[in-house]
Image (cartoon, rainbow over all chains, first blue to last red; front, side, top):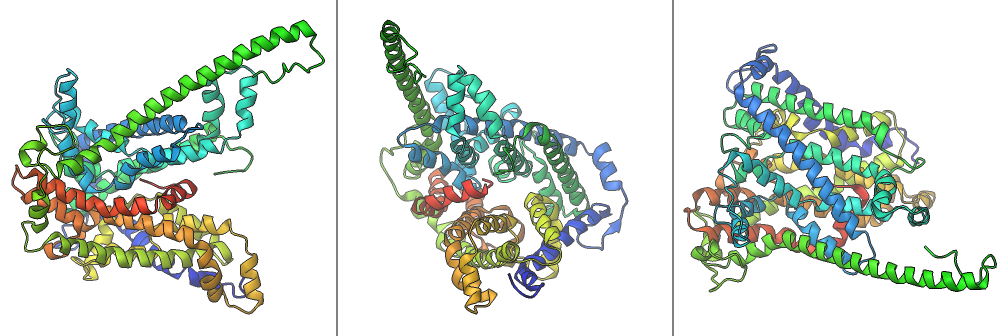
Length: 293
Length: 310
């Protein structure tokens, strides 16, 4: 279609401008800045690997923050995905009201990023908040959610688990697309529910699991609103995720060089994990023919 | 399954058939009972989970109408003596502006951002889906790469760029990148959608002498409408909820969007004036909730066809 070979490029013009101005050049610039000392007032000064060396040898905040970030991602993502899949599995059944439930579960995801929800979380998990009121009425002891470094991070994990809806909708769509004759065949062969799930359902939805895994992981590594509003990184930096640290370095202390180096370390971690996921996906992601979803 | 043991099956003798018929009836009864139990368990679980999902929101609305002394005293959501105090006082804020002003600011970001996203992403998706040009493969790969690129990497140089352009403390940094098809996800979603639409109509229009732009405007855009509605709705939601962007770029209170104003009211409201903050939280969530319930079909469809973060 089109007689001019470059006509298509004309339609891409906004993308091309945006790609260079707001993505490609900033991407390279941030790598450059990470090797400099730059405080916004004087010009960037080349510092070689100093930022990175400082980070891994002297900076105890970085070590703490990195550790907290990894714990957060590696608890939140699996818990959220497992929960989303579990609920999608239950919903994938000839149930009346399925649309009602699907909508109800999806609402928290829609509101997800809003800081009003983070505010709500502060109230719900407060010492005399809703959660503790329920716990004490059931005879349990009230939990010090935000004051205790052992619990604070988990409240943010719970917040993000509460927003399992979008992952669930994607899982549900995948479950609904599975050919019913496979289940009938399995039932004739005498496979129970558990075996059917692990040997038929799970392999068939691995592409979607893979997609959700990557998306949720990239997102979890960049969590900012939750800890910023709910715990301000505390107590004792137990919720001081790397994006918070980067924000403080860049926009509070205006140490743009060091902040860029931190951002690149975070980026490198995300990249390495994404590459591992892609690489290992050849072994565990199953594509029926070439029908990729 | 008992489909093989039908009485008319010539492989079975009569007495066998009687026995098997009885057995299969028992089995069918057992299956029905199992299915019923299974359905009951499913409904019980779904209802319990639904309760946990929605109760915080219901409580929030109820608590915003409670007096401050009642908020932490009573886990129910129905206020003993409902009061609009929180709304009235919260709306005034501790600044010279009311929340109406902050809602207006949010609108001033959302409007150009959503419109710009819809126009630019449509054009770019059309270019990718319907044309061949040099470098197409690399450019499409760059789109996927952008999709996976964490914003955290480009944030600092973008800030420096906007500073040099003199855009700090204006709404420009918040919507201009999106208006240049900066949200790769939406382009990708529209490309997928376009690829699934047959080209017959477009080719017919071309034969009739329409140029590619007329074809886009009069043939493609109407067919893309449902996908475009999804794009606009998601952009609306995400912009309504965006906090980090305004936090970095907006510094004067008179330009605060709702998200920053809410954060400000947490910081400045006296420690025990809880219902003001809860009331303003309800209002901050209201536009997104209303839009979602009016148009939920488009959200669910958008998310299951494209796959969305959230």
